[in-house]
Image (cartoon, rainbow, N blue to C red):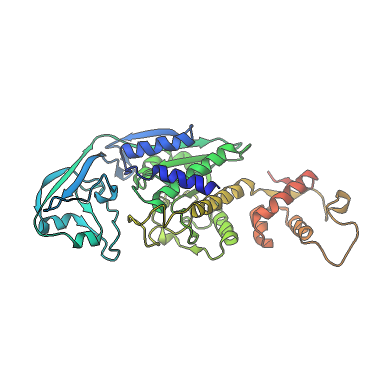
Length: 426
């Protein structure tokens, strides 16, 4: 089952310390390239201006921990990389408990969870721990060691172009900057990787696919700063892929426009595979769709998710794991939903009937020669479809009109094409 393959890949990536920059990002991209050999790994230098932002320094960590007054090592970065505040500057010294507490971060409402906290654009240091562990700290002197460095380096990202018959593009984007989180990070990376493998394996593609693996926010801004003019000319649809690995629900987040083909396709898929999906509005945005749909960029990018970021209790904590939250079944569901969406984009042609009046179907052996009171549902579906093939209605529009999932029409369309009854309107 493909869900198990995706889940195994997520396990392989689990222990890597990812952030906006650094060796963890490069290691992750290298492992993706094992599946996608044509993935190109690019870099942008620290200090480079990207629209209103600047590429930050590269971050590297050797070790980080706290020694308690009784000699116990806690908040050990080597045991769980969420313990260290993301982008912590180096620090070494001794503090009493009261002094140390201002550098400690917890989630009182989730006392067993280690929170995920970062300080990318202001130099700080700190540690994250569970509220239970925080409550057990004793008075006395604590030894703190953070052996890290910030330096002028590179921000890395991966790009894959899969060519199709048309230079018009479908865009897929996911991020590679969160450590030790399953739904909010690894599900997007792994599902996107396996979708790209599937796309690579197709005998033919009508559209070209632009697929990127980037650090969230700064990565999408950097990529857009280099490519947005070309992207606006070429991209006709796309999805930001995140939080597609749990098995609790499905969710939809629209583009800012809300009426793009990506939006229509996403809603159609979810209406048929999970009618009780949770529908959000543009005001609920929170990932890289903020950049792709921003004023002046205005790309047609929507999101198909499982449990949306910020909406499930384990979000941005150590509880977002590959055992309790992200499952092979959940990953397979996310993969299949987006796969169906991409198939729709490929197959959503506009057909025109080639004969005037209703075609004589029985002479083509497409309709029974003996008339009866009851019409077979498959025949009714075919005749309803033909009745709407006027050169103005796309297949998706017809599917919505006759209230069937579009994939129920694929074989019917091939049958009508082979009988020379319909033609694609150019």
